[in-house]
Image (cartoon, rainbow, N blue to C red):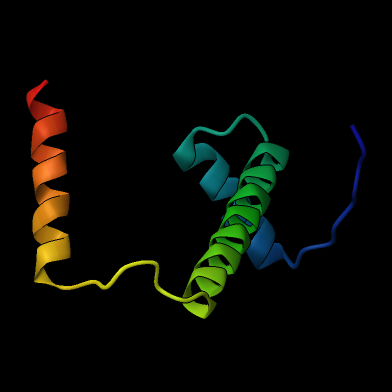
Length: 79
């Protein structure tokens, strides 16, 4: 595993230490890794949403579309 060193002002170091304790992380590194993973996930989601927004609609989305979707969900949950 690669290492990276970061410098934080005392106030941020205290905040990280509090988060480690309150959220049950073993180390500050675990907390920071989780923050980075969440940020990467957020960026991937943003890209997917922007790609979807830029694409043309495959079908029209109207009341019938949502009615059919609800029915498919009902059928799957009844199994």
